[in-house]
Length: 419
Image (cartoon, rainbow, N blue to C red; front, side):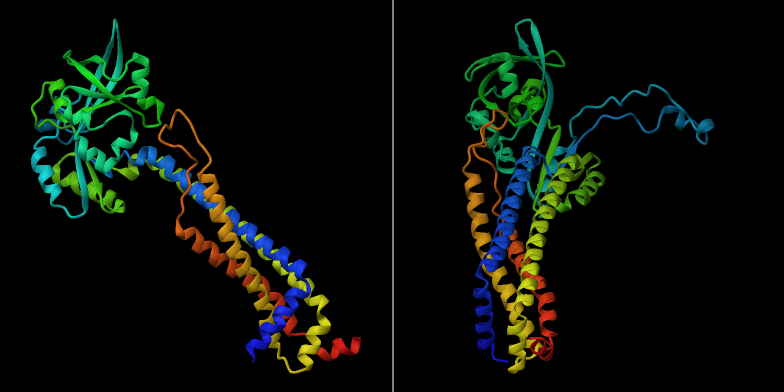
């Protein structure tokens, strides 16, 4: 087998019908281009949509939920301990939302090597006092630096400086929707009232915008110390412990572990945001399905072109076999032709796919709901380019393999005798 000779024959057949070869290569190029562009754009969109919630959600959240007692007084009575007791209108236990002994819990968590970081938090229901009108709101007391490190807090502060929450006493970062309803500017002082009737004046040092309008109308942020002062609690008062893990897949198992270990309620990110993961999975599946379909269609185009080439080159194939080329050699010639089309078209497709993705990445995307997003989202994951390369080679190889088998079985005697 003389590979140099086989490549020379393949080159001759390729350029003998160069228009058909060009059409096949363009088909592969277009398929790879759209495959790369579609996956890059859809993946970037998934990252954007998931980031609105998932970036702001702890992997594991520990909290104390007030629930009715599982056992009512009648269950402790000897006379009724074996009976089925039905109690209506059961009231919640008389407990506080505070996580008890939170200092010891945080110390244990800090020693856990599976944890990336911990951010304590206080959630307080309040009313924003606007003249004679009270607007319902939620104030989150946060450790400002840890909240920014773990949950990119500053990316959602659209005006003002997030660090002022720590540096300026009795300050607040208002949700953008709440600020608009109250017609409040940065530097203004607002008054809030807790559900216990405690009132406090807070200075507005920034606006927060998550991209979810309903949340931005009620949610605001203060420092932990300001929230504790607002609620009239000690500096050890905490209602939530937010945990960011090194490996997010450990969240469900660690949630169960921490719930039993610390005797608190716990929820993992997969459970809290299952609908977002489902949406991302479906969008990604659709993207791959469409992209692979394009590649398969291009493969059929190459298959048809090679089939036509075989019928048109029956004489040439018969002469090749009559002069000593084996069926395996003829088979390899047409596979080389197919792979040449696939590799050349695939390389151009990767280049055009990257270029088109970069072009989309520069198109302005301005919306009031997402002020931090300036252009359409694109994900330049190398995995997409690797998958595109593999599929272009595999589909073109299969497209050339079946016609080449037919060519390798041609009997030169029958062809020449027919002529």
